[in-house]
Every structure is written in structure tokens, then in C-alpha cells.
Image (cartoon, rainbow, N blue to C red):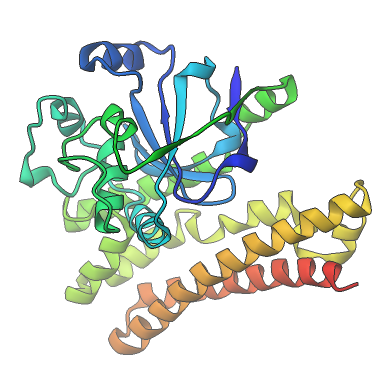
Length: 322
């Protein structure tokens, strides 16, 4: 088994893959392609993609590859387009998968009624098109291979290495991001029963409640009982050293390694802080303007996430400032 070298990846990189699974091999054979799936890097170790479970995130450390030739990493050299593509991909989390559109992509059949649903290469191609880079002729009906062949990307070489046994064991262990995706999908299924299929992502919920607050209390209760509001607790339990300078200092690694780690953690914390502050400000405005219980609930969630990110940042800065 193989893994991607995260040190060689950058935000906005596109990961094109295939596997030994029957469906992947079938897609490649039918479409005469080398790849059956497209993935977008959105963070230090995270990606967003669309699969039959919908649009959700994943951990690159858990992305096991059967053969080294089964993956290709490509890059768009446009920082503005990358920033916009990542923002769009994040906004699509929870969106349902379109099996019909994925199947019709080879024949370039595009149904406007299905435009709000996603499949892997549509998600990546439309994300960059909205960012100003049109990777393929038809972003809504394209194949992963078309992205691989795009004239607007270049390949990132030597990104694959043979995984060690401990890395394989980690990749197959309990995945909190997978649990987060399950919680998000359960929320969206419940909300769709109230508001219909127009709700494709979490951002759609906010827009719908602003237009019609009829189900404000019921949707707030759905979130309350889902586990969504406390997902951050697992991260703090597993990586408590990120939020406590004494625990960070006590890590069983050299001072040089701690310094390198602190720099990396500071970068991660700053990115999280920017993201959470934007959401906090958005829900503060909506809470004040529309008096929605849902907005109040989300405001306090992001307030907590901002506080966590500040603790994370303080720990890294405190160590570097010693």
C-alpha cells in the first residue's frame, strides 16, 4: 500500500486516483481513462471530494493507494483561483451525490435539473471554474481524466511512497472525519424532510431559514441532538498538547522538532482562526438581523471554535517565544 507525501502537497492540489476495486476498474475501462476519482486538497492534511455518500472531507493520511501508478497530483498556479475553489468546495459539504450525472459525464449529457448535486470531477472542475480557471470544456459533465489532461495544470512529481505498517494501521483505524460526515449527512436528511431537496448543503439551511423561519426551532433541535455541536471535543481530547503549553513542552521529541512542529501548528491555527472568525461574524449578523434560534446556536458554536483556535495559536506562539 502507498501514501501521498504531505510535505510535497499544497492547498488546491488536485489528487486523481483509481483503485483495484471493481467500480473503479470499470469506470477506467468504460471511459478509457487512467483515473476514476478526483479530490481537492483543502488543508494541511485534509481534502474534500464527492463520492456516493455525498460531498465530504477526508484525511490524506488515510488515503491508501493500491499501486503508485494509481495516483497523480496536479497543480493550478493561480492563488486566487485556489482560494475561491477551496471556499466553494467547503460550501458544498453535505451536497448529495448524483449517480446519473456521474454516469452521463462520458457522453457529455448534462441535466440542468441536477446542477446542484455533485460527483467528484464536477466538484473539482466547477470549483476552479468559479475561481476563474476553466480546467475542462464542460465542468458540469467531465471525467477525472480530462482534469489530468488539462492544459491549465502541471503534475507534481514524486508524491507517492510505500506506507509503513503503522501508517496503514492508522489509515484503517477509527476516523473522526468519517463520523463527522455521517453526522452532517444525517442532519441534511432530516432537514430535507422538512424543506425538501432544495437543501443540498449546510449553507442552504441558513438561506432557507432567512427566507422562511417556520422551521427554525425544529432545525435548531435537529442540530442539538445530532452531535454536530460537540464534534470539536474529540480533537481536543486526542491532541490536547495543541491547547496547553505545558503538554506541548512535554512532548517526547527534540527541541528542534518541537520548534518545527510549533511553526506548523501556528500556520494551521491561523488558517482555522480565519475560517471560524468569518463564520462567527456571519452568524452574529444573521442572529441580530433575523433573530433566528438557529443563527444563535451556530454563533455560539463558532465562538467556541474561535476560542479553541486562539488557544491553539497561543500554545504555538508561546513555545516559539520562549
